[in-house]
Amino acid sequence: MFTKFGYNTIGIILIIALILVSIGIYSNSNYLRFFIFVFAGLIVAFTLNFFRDPDRIINSNKNSFLSPADGKVMLVKKVIPNRYINEECWQVSIFMSPLDVHVNRIPVDGKVEFINYIEGKYLMAFNDKADSENERNEIGILSSNGKILFTQVAGFIARRIISELKTGQSVKQGDRFGMIKFGSRCDIILPLKWEIKVKTGQQVYAGTTVLFEIPNEKN
Image (tube, rainbow, N blue to C red):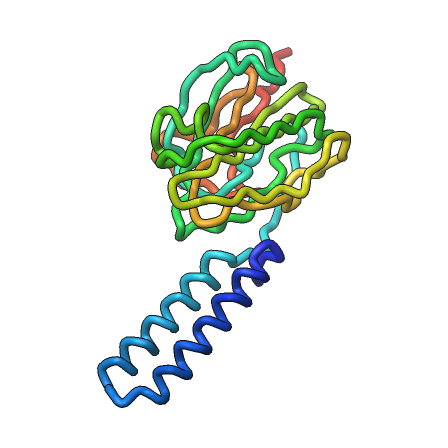
Protein backbone atom coordinates (compact mmCIF):
# COMPACT_ATOMS: atom_id res chain seq x y z
CA MET A 1 0.00 0.00 0.00
CA PHE A 2 1.28 3.43 -0.94
CA THR A 3 0.33 6.82 0.49
CA LYS A 4 -1.85 9.13 -1.57
CA PHE A 5 0.65 11.89 -0.78
CA GLY A 6 3.15 10.17 -3.06
CA TYR A 7 1.04 9.34 -6.12
CA ASN A 8 2.35 12.28 -8.19
CA THR A 9 5.98 11.58 -7.34
CA ILE A 10 5.59 7.85 -8.02
CA GLY A 11 4.01 8.62 -11.39
CA ILE A 12 6.84 10.97 -12.37
CA ILE A 13 9.52 8.46 -11.34
CA LEU A 14 7.82 5.66 -13.29
CA ILE A 15 7.74 7.84 -16.41
CA ILE A 16 11.43 8.72 -15.99
CA ALA A 17 12.28 5.05 -15.48
CA LEU A 18 10.32 4.09 -18.61
CA ILE A 19 12.21 6.69 -20.64
CA LEU A 20 15.53 5.41 -19.30
CA VAL A 21 14.64 1.80 -20.12
CA SER A 22 13.65 2.85 -23.65
CA ILE A 23 17.01 4.55 -24.07
CA GLY A 24 18.77 1.47 -22.73
CA ILE A 25 16.98 -0.86 -25.13
CA TYR A 26 18.31 1.06 -28.12
CA SER A 27 21.82 1.51 -26.70
CA ASN A 28 24.66 -0.16 -28.59
CA SER A 29 26.70 -0.58 -25.40
CA ASN A 30 25.93 -3.54 -23.18
CA TYR A 31 27.62 -1.81 -20.22
CA LEU A 32 25.57 1.37 -20.69
CA ARG A 33 22.40 -0.68 -21.11
CA PHE A 34 23.12 -2.57 -17.88
CA PHE A 35 23.86 0.66 -15.99
CA ILE A 36 20.65 2.32 -17.22
CA PHE A 37 18.50 -0.70 -16.33
CA VAL A 38 20.02 -0.95 -12.84
CA PHE A 39 19.70 2.80 -12.22
CA ALA A 40 16.06 2.84 -13.38
CA GLY A 41 15.29 -0.13 -11.14
CA LEU A 42 16.96 1.47 -8.12
CA ILE A 43 15.12 4.79 -8.36
CA VAL A 44 11.79 2.99 -8.76
CA ALA A 45 12.53 0.69 -5.81
CA PHE A 46 13.63 3.60 -3.60
CA THR A 47 10.55 5.67 -4.47
CA LEU A 48 8.09 2.84 -3.88
CA ASN A 49 9.81 1.99 -0.59
CA PHE A 50 9.78 5.63 0.55
CA PHE A 51 6.06 6.12 -0.12
CA ARG A 52 4.93 2.84 1.41
CA ASP A 53 2.06 3.20 3.86
CA PRO A 54 1.44 -0.01 5.82
CA ASP A 55 -1.80 -0.53 7.73
CA ARG A 56 -1.33 -0.66 11.48
CA ILE A 57 -3.39 -1.74 14.46
CA ILE A 58 -3.97 1.38 16.57
CA ASN A 59 -4.32 0.72 20.30
CA SER A 60 -6.29 3.85 21.14
CA ASN A 61 -5.98 5.13 24.70
CA LYS A 62 -6.85 8.66 25.84
CA ASN A 63 -4.01 8.52 28.40
CA SER A 64 -1.37 7.55 25.85
CA PHE A 65 0.48 9.75 23.36
CA LEU A 66 1.38 7.69 20.29
CA SER A 67 4.31 8.52 18.06
CA PRO A 68 3.29 10.74 15.10
CA ALA A 69 6.25 9.49 13.04
CA ASP A 70 8.50 6.51 12.34
CA GLY A 71 12.14 6.99 13.19
CA LYS A 72 14.74 7.02 15.93
CA VAL A 73 14.53 9.10 19.13
CA MET A 74 17.45 11.51 18.84
CA LEU A 75 16.75 13.93 21.67
CA VAL A 76 14.96 14.16 25.02
CA LYS A 77 15.09 17.44 26.95
CA LYS A 78 13.06 19.99 28.91
CA VAL A 79 11.90 23.19 27.20
CA ILE A 80 9.52 26.12 27.65
CA PRO A 81 7.95 26.49 24.19
CA ASN A 82 6.08 29.80 24.72
CA ARG A 83 3.76 28.99 21.84
CA TYR A 84 0.42 27.29 22.36
CA ILE A 85 1.81 25.76 25.58
CA ASN A 86 3.34 28.22 28.04
CA GLU A 87 4.84 26.00 30.71
CA GLU A 88 7.85 23.74 31.16
CA CYS A 89 7.55 20.70 28.91
CA TRP A 90 9.27 17.59 27.69
CA GLN A 91 10.57 17.64 24.12
CA VAL A 92 11.21 14.40 22.26
CA SER A 93 12.69 14.65 18.77
CA ILE A 94 12.43 11.83 16.23
CA PHE A 95 14.82 11.57 13.29
CA MET A 96 13.18 10.15 10.15
CA SER A 97 15.71 8.57 7.79
CA PRO A 98 14.93 8.10 4.07
CA LEU A 99 14.33 4.40 4.81
CA ASP A 100 11.59 5.02 7.40
CA VAL A 101 7.87 5.19 6.64
CA HIS A 102 7.19 8.92 6.31
CA VAL A 103 3.42 9.06 6.72
CA ASN A 104 2.51 11.03 9.86
CA ARG A 105 -0.32 10.01 12.20
CA ILE A 106 -2.38 11.80 14.85
CA PRO A 107 -0.94 11.08 18.33
CA VAL A 108 -4.05 11.77 20.47
CA ASP A 109 -7.81 12.26 20.14
CA GLY A 110 -8.85 15.89 20.31
CA LYS A 111 -9.41 19.12 18.40
CA VAL A 112 -6.82 21.02 16.37
CA GLU A 113 -6.55 24.47 17.97
CA PHE A 114 -3.23 25.72 16.63
CA ILE A 115 -1.46 25.49 13.28
CA ASN A 116 1.59 27.61 12.55
CA TYR A 117 3.56 27.10 9.33
CA ILE A 118 6.98 28.78 9.41
CA GLU A 119 9.31 29.27 6.47
CA GLY A 120 12.93 28.74 7.40
CA LYS A 121 16.27 27.14 6.69
CA TYR A 122 17.11 23.57 5.68
CA LEU A 123 19.69 22.57 8.27
CA MET A 124 20.47 18.90 8.79
CA ALA A 125 17.65 17.34 10.80
CA PHE A 126 19.97 16.39 13.69
CA ASN A 127 21.30 19.96 14.03
CA ASP A 128 20.47 21.43 17.48
CA LYS A 129 18.98 24.52 15.84
CA ALA A 130 16.80 22.69 13.31
CA ASP A 131 13.74 22.80 15.58
CA SER A 132 13.87 26.61 15.79
CA GLU A 133 15.39 27.65 12.45
CA ASN A 134 14.20 25.14 9.83
CA GLU A 135 11.01 25.27 7.81
CA ARG A 136 8.36 23.63 9.97
CA ASN A 137 4.66 23.11 10.62
CA GLU A 138 3.59 23.39 14.27
CA ILE A 139 0.36 21.63 15.30
CA GLY A 140 -1.41 22.10 18.63
CA ILE A 141 -4.20 19.76 19.75
CA LEU A 142 -6.48 20.11 22.76
CA SER A 143 -6.93 16.59 24.17
CA SER A 144 -8.83 15.31 27.20
CA ASN A 145 -5.52 15.62 29.09
CA GLY A 146 -4.83 19.18 28.00
CA LYS A 147 -2.75 20.78 25.29
CA ILE A 148 -0.11 18.94 23.24
CA LEU A 149 2.17 20.30 20.53
CA PHE A 150 4.12 18.56 17.79
CA THR A 151 6.03 19.82 14.77
CA GLN A 152 6.82 18.54 11.30
CA VAL A 153 10.35 19.81 10.58
CA ALA A 154 11.92 19.97 7.12
CA GLY A 155 15.56 18.95 6.79
CA PHE A 156 18.52 19.24 4.43
CA ILE A 157 16.99 16.84 1.90
CA ALA A 158 13.32 17.12 2.85
CA ARG A 159 11.87 20.18 1.17
CA ARG A 160 8.15 19.60 1.33
CA ILE A 161 5.88 19.33 4.36
CA ILE A 162 2.38 17.99 3.74
CA SER A 163 -0.50 18.33 6.23
CA GLU A 164 -4.25 18.09 5.69
CA LEU A 165 -5.14 19.43 9.13
CA LYS A 166 -7.23 22.56 9.67
CA THR A 167 -7.92 24.63 12.78
CA GLY A 168 -11.10 23.49 14.52
CA GLN A 169 -10.91 19.99 13.07
CA SER A 170 -11.63 17.01 15.34
CA VAL A 171 -8.98 14.31 15.02
CA LYS A 172 -8.69 10.68 16.03
CA GLN A 173 -5.63 8.93 17.42
CA GLY A 174 -3.75 6.99 14.73
CA ASP A 175 -5.35 8.67 11.70
CA ARG A 176 -3.04 9.65 8.85
CA PHE A 177 -2.77 13.40 8.26
CA GLY A 178 0.34 14.13 6.19
CA MET A 179 4.04 13.46 5.65
CA ILE A 180 7.46 15.03 5.18
CA LYS A 181 9.05 14.06 1.90
CA PHE A 182 12.53 12.52 1.86
CA GLY A 183 13.66 12.43 5.46
CA SER A 184 13.59 14.88 8.34
CA ARG A 185 12.41 15.05 11.97
CA CYS A 186 9.37 15.40 14.17
CA ASP A 187 9.43 17.26 17.50
CA ILE A 188 6.90 16.50 20.25
CA ILE A 189 6.27 18.87 23.16
CA LEU A 190 4.14 17.89 26.17
CA PRO A 191 3.73 19.24 29.72
CA LEU A 192 5.77 17.54 32.44
CA LYS A 193 2.71 15.73 33.83
CA TRP A 194 3.16 13.28 30.94
CA GLU A 195 5.56 10.41 31.68
CA ILE A 196 8.16 9.58 29.01
CA LYS A 197 8.07 5.94 27.88
CA VAL A 198 10.95 5.99 25.35
CA LYS A 199 14.67 6.72 25.47
CA THR A 200 17.31 8.17 23.17
CA GLY A 201 18.27 5.83 20.35
CA GLN A 202 15.01 3.88 20.42
CA GLN A 203 13.21 3.10 17.15
CA VAL A 204 9.57 4.21 17.21
CA TYR A 205 6.62 3.71 14.86
CA ALA A 206 3.77 6.09 14.02
CA GLY A 207 0.45 5.11 15.52
CA THR A 208 1.79 2.18 17.56
CA THR A 209 4.69 3.24 19.81
CA VAL A 210 3.65 4.95 23.06
CA LEU A 211 5.92 7.97 23.61
CA PHE A 212 4.19 9.33 26.72
CA GLU A 213 1.53 8.29 29.21
CA ILE A 214 -0.49 10.02 31.90
CA PRO A 215 0.44 8.13 35.09
CA ASN A 216 -2.40 6.39 36.91
CA GLU A 217 -3.59 8.43 39.89
CA LYS A 218 -2.78 6.85 43.23
CA ASN A 219 -5.67 6.20 45.57
